[in-house]
Length: 257
Image 1 (tube, rainbow, N blue to C red):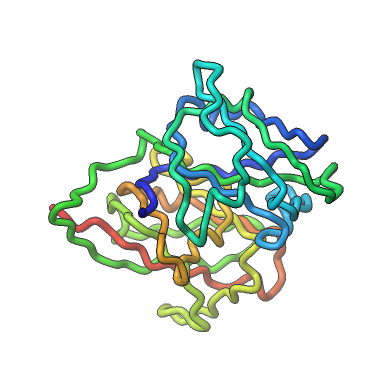
Image 2 (cartoon, rainbow, N blue to C red):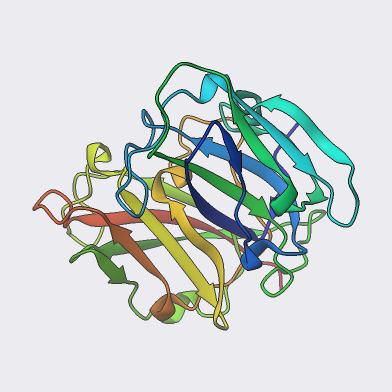
């Protein structure tokens, strides 16, 4: 079973104050249909975008989700490890009442004062495009960005204006095709990406590493999203010499006319 088409991704940080973790009010996700959910832990991503240590023990975390507009628990005490099995993401396909949904932690780690970080994959009507799945034709373009500090915006790229992107594949060349020193994967887990189109952040504060998919059989499937590159950016928690390298993508683009 392959991942479902998504047109939005949102990274949510939740500060932990006790072992029952309530989701915050999140206007960004209100009335959005959630396709997939993914939990990050300390091993994958040591620090949140606000530089808070993440909870490591997601093995003993359980998720309960309430259907929006009802009191029905559509997910009850689901171990969060089952949400993503080596890239194969569990299909949720519900509109969630986040303020009545929660996470329970049953392990022994002292999680108070740390953060939980969750990525939601959802439908964003403002940016999606109809995808031709019968006679699909694609082209592949490259995109790179040399990081210059804590927040680096993408540059104008005429070839990507109006293009419908189906997949973003993050790679780690030592030297990029433009001759820039490529980012080493050891410096990936403290970086986050935000992509916008018509002032809608459809990918918001998402760990950059989720787009490293070379070893995954199941990859993220994007529903023909478009970019305003000059309103899109990558943030980095650190600014060392090793951080200030080029991030390199291959973009799979819908080429149907």
